[in-house]
Length: 266
Image (cartoon, rainbow, N blue to C red):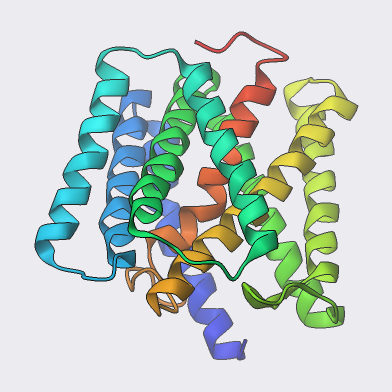
């Protein structure tokens, strides 16, 4: 990426991070959930752009569908763990799908995919923030962003072997390894900060990083099928909301389930 493009990405990330941090750290936790909900619904709006025929009607319809499902899961206090496991099954299926790509992407899969990406991911992040607090939520974000950042710089420096050439030719195995190495360092620091078992937390962090890669590649398939480079244009240099939360949505259910080793999930 040219230096100017990298500067734009960094500036955008900084300008977005400041208000997000203000809400997460300095306001009641319920406001953080509201913010996560807004981001998930923005992702639903963009997801509707993956359909063959895109219109305001289809976007509003899909936005309504995701809103209703999120509202029902919250209002009726559905058991969290089964919802998270549904999300995990989806990402496992997505991993197999990546290995077999290119394959057709039927409309029903586009519809179901958005539900299985956005709802479990949103629920996991909301419960993580409410149950574990802003520091653990921030730690999770650092893991995902660390995996992405490490993969980017190592891949640009020494990357040669493509990770998934039919899905995303720019990603390399060397880059992925660099991302995992950075995540292991972040996980080690997190174990010290949160006073959690080092080996287990680092293993969980590495698993989350690998899940985040699957999330990134999966959304790339949907974008490629729709003929899109980015899911949207909200963030200069970054694309849309989905381009930012694809990895997060994949890693969040696994991370919250893994934290259940240390504390019951409610």
